[in-house]
Length: 160
Length: 199
Image (tube, rainbow over all chains, first blue to last red; front, side):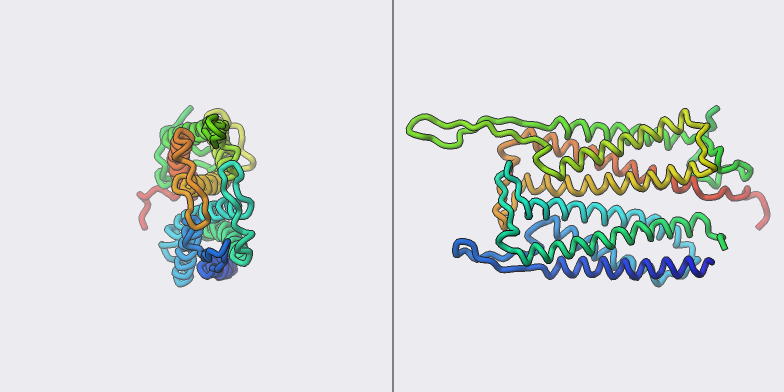
């Protein structure tokens, strides 16, 4: 039973690595050139601090998950891993919610503030970013499950 | 009868069943402060409004004035911020009430587990609200030249100041909530036998 639990946790972590790595990479490679009124401008992820935060947060989480996979199952560091899992889940929630807030402004604009939506001019960039956000959300859901699993493993270790 | 107790469950005597976990004064105090922080953030942001009459254009010699207002409802991120912090403060209040007066609630020994899980959900919600509001506030303060979005803080200074105050208070509440969550999870660990026994 303990082995099944460990295996389940490992599978979840591998899936979470996949989700966060793909979110970071898709966000990092989002870029599109467009020309508006004969001014050509390029939309990149680094133009918007929120997207930079999203990419950095997902990169950190994927490196962290990769390192945790190599930790042996019953080591004493598992308690630290449980605590760090909580912190990392918080990082993921705040990064995706920040990116989503700014992406919503980019898609719908904010008439009261005089901010025009930019998705009309760079539709492929918008789709790219939405894909990254979707992958980030999947990573978040997986990490919530990982958090519950690792807390359960730490608090009830001898449940065989 | 309140039992003074430290946060570490290792200090509990081995015979205390989980359902009768002793009241923890430190946890209660932290919850009270977190309640005040998140409630202050909710109230300050919810009452955040600034109206300004500005000259928009001039026809001949008569200036045309327009009254523009900045309210928190105009930005979905701030609406989410208010809702998330409101729920966090309600959660803290509920937990304080349950700690002080809810000794009868046990739910078959699942009381501590439910409290820990609710704490984790609240902290995730609050952290999402903080992240979104912070980046929207940064957008309003600095604008974004690439997307041609102008900053609004130079015109609506008081709106921005109140907003930043609310966000800072919410971050303080979030930090306290993380500590509270760690403590409630720590309470779930089974009490170890007294350390006087031989290894």
